[in-house]
Length: 526
Image 1 (cartoon, one colour):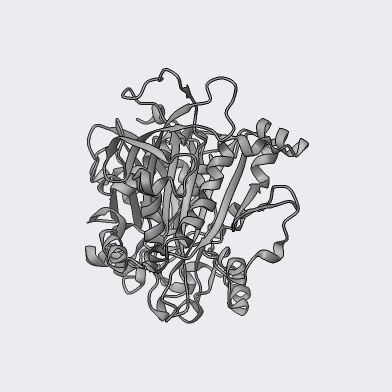
Image 2 (tube, helix red, strand yellow; image 1 turned 90 degrees about the vertical axis):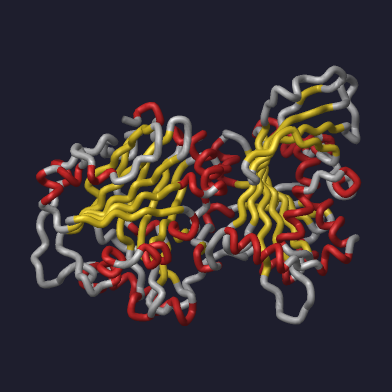
């Protein structure tokens, strides 16, 4: 394999995207001895005297606009180390969005932008900055060390033609390019922190606690799933440096965030469990009542059900095997297992366009719940994802049970419990099956307790419970969904809903329902 090490920062190439021919993903990775909070603040800081010490590309930045505390637009100039014959001076405009998860990981998205306050400038050549993402993840260190560590990753998209040309002739010209300057930022950041001992020992406990408190949740609110498919990178530069330079810490820390099935015996037992119905295993539904037959063809939402994978602007209901959930021994060893088939059946999806937030969908006279067939169902769970945009949207999923819910079960306690209990237990897991790499990386595959991340309102009546999820109530969630909407016509996304198990008797977890949304068209919303 080929690789390059820039004073501790490694550069990798993504195999999958290079084969797709749509561009190459490269990333620079380094372990830095400082807290994630400190490194995040250094990256966001625009002070020239500090930035010039580590950033050889965007050291000269000017803030144009700032929105919502999580988004800004910047203008920068760049004079290459190796000037071209003409227009050696370059300028650029790009936007930054940043998010902070409960596990302490920071994500910064950088995208090329245009802004009326900064038109083309005489004497400068306007360039387009490569789309990129910074990830800053805390690495656990032994107590008493007095220092913190974090894994810093910068991922970037490069046009395949330019990259492959450099790869083929092994030319040193790559060192004269803007992508190379960007990738060197990680190396510069590492050297900058090493040269400033105060940054290496700064832990920013107060800042970290304040930010986590603002997110209203504990570390358990977000759980890493197995992201091995996203990390199939190999070393991509010229050979020559020895991999023996890699420290044991770096070998271990690059694996941060992976979930391991620690208890193999339970993983095997979990496969056997799938042969039994989830309802029998948990008795979430009344075992003394014979199940009814649910014909999904008699229920019609505004969004069509897909006939096969080639259909677009449609929904389907995948199995739960694509999601990893808490296993039977989770409280002892954090073991997780693949999910089984959903407990509830998805019978319809509405894709709605509204001026204001749409609450209490189930009470509408034309609602699926109010139909004659809907009234005969033992129980319906309605999840209404309220999406802020111009216009606003509501994605409404209807899940039905074939038997009454056992009132003494966890599901029964959730349905008839308090809003506080529901907020602490209702969990959603996303998974981008197909889509733009930046969206996939931003959305991730982390389980989220929705009631602690955004505002959820609950409506319990007759044979249904409706959950209205106000995505716009969180500026972070609003930023993420704004990015997703920009690429929604090319995205295939799976969602799973479940109730978080916190007690031994509630384990293993089970999936309540799933939905796959295949390349939705905003203009098709009713």
